[in-house]
Length: 300
Image (cartoon, rainbow, N blue to C red; front, side, top):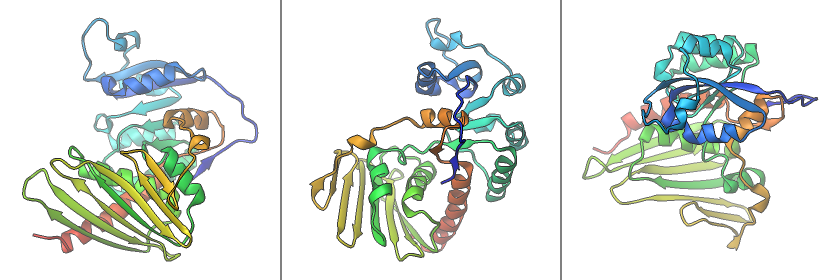
């Protein structure tokens, strides 16, 4: 994870523009309105709810070009509205980006954006909902190495591509490095709504991550286990049970702060660790290897 920082933290008011399905971004709009360091100056929207009481009508509508020029920060949830050249142009203009959905980019496009953000000193942050969980923040600070991590995540309505990205981004702060060896296999269930995937990731320090994920008609499970010398960790994110060596973990020191708050602080020069386009690029490159393995070693 890359850190953005400044020796002197001078807070300024950030002008924020919103691009995409505004109704799907309501929780982020409400968070911004509570933040004294940011203000929404406009939107370029799709999927507008026309009910007169809807809060969307209090935000001025702009075309994308004008909004991009006016804003310091852009919150985007629908990258299909932007061509890759437009996205590159936003970065070159040193506009910070907070992505609430994952852009469909090739490995080469991701690498190009990494280069551009470095040159423009722009923050391109992507949503990483699992990474900022209290329990994961504890794990990233306290995990012993080498470790065997076993993750099981099954959701009946999951989108497989998005779920895999979320799980791999979640573990970026835990594994610290990219896997040296990748194994993957997939099995389809008896119905179109049932699929099982397994990943086995091996790292240079002898750590191993095993991920079982997919979707089933009735199953909803999200469990992480970690085994290391003198340390056994169990997280059940559904039941909110978090233990180490069979004792409850005190997570109060790791109280949540929203990803958007971290992003706004980072855009204002305050030091924070966040999920950047570099992390996303590494994950997309890893997924390319995973998909190749799955096509070779999958159950029929």
